Length: 403
Ligand SMILES: Cc1ncc(COP(=O)(O)O)c(C=O)c1O
Image 1 (spheres, protein in one colour):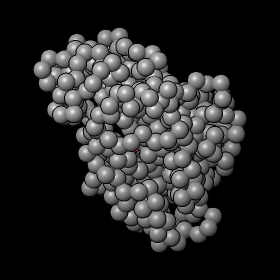
Image 2: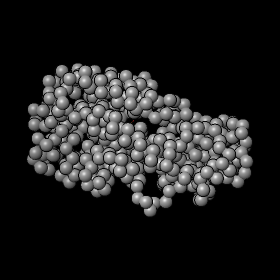
Image 3: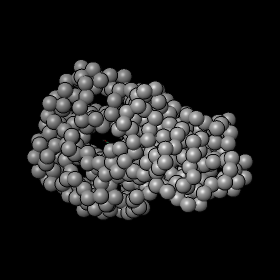
């Protein structure tokens, strides 16, 4: 990390210094570095970061400095961002549906080799557009995305929109091989998947497809989905997933030449960022804060995660009694209300700050600018993970510790 970038001790120090009335992302580079090292050292294969999860340049720099060099990209702007920033990084085009000119530019300008498909027409499109670009389909790796069943304990099922069934997948693999491409299989068990067994189930389907297709695979991509602990869910350790995947892959007997890939988003970056918001009005048990469902908290409205939250106040004592509060976002829309409540000191008042933890994933990248409200400030904090807590720390203690 560049040494000249200002770094605060923690979110309370940010409040003390800036008294911000706008939302701020507090980025913890050390947390991101540590989780990236766990992936790079523990996953039995190559780790791709799913850029969609959070493409902020500071996040990317943390991951790059930890050793991440491979990226799951889904659009030309994502590919360009990585390619124009990191010369030695490799992008994989993991979106199953792409525009023709996008494919052509991805191949001709950025030299992308790996393309995901889930339909024969998409394979044809890729072959046509890449042949126009360089006439060398032999360089291509066509990765067929397969459907996996909805897994228990998974917050967001991702096979409802994309994926080929085993018979379709086998046929696409055969066509790709017949046209001179290397082949691979990909799946995604669903985001925030808390059961490692979901990977075992998916890998068994891979085995069926490989047997049916009779092709030689060059890669197998087990996707993302690795979970994070939130206030309402305790996720198993990443290492349980790595071991389950290792065993599931070994049972397939694919041989040593098949490269195993994963493409985590959430698990790499969620814990490395909190969101500092301010209370702009209190009406009894309702708080109106400066970020919400249309902004950085959009995922909370969709997948039932409840992030830990704590109050920060630096000009007075805070009650030790907790109360549940409804959290309203800043826009004029009446659906801009969090589906979960926050447990906070019962004397929360206008001007207090709320630090919402585990907000690195699908927060700023999924936010809109609706009504003119959006968080665009990232500040670096800390050298240790924030505690997973919902209780308030006395302000004097917080401030004394941090200055
Ligand atoms: C194709 C693909 N790969 C990887 C990811 C990252 O998933 P996660 O953040 O659950 O690890 C996603 C998320 O939508 C995805 O669609």
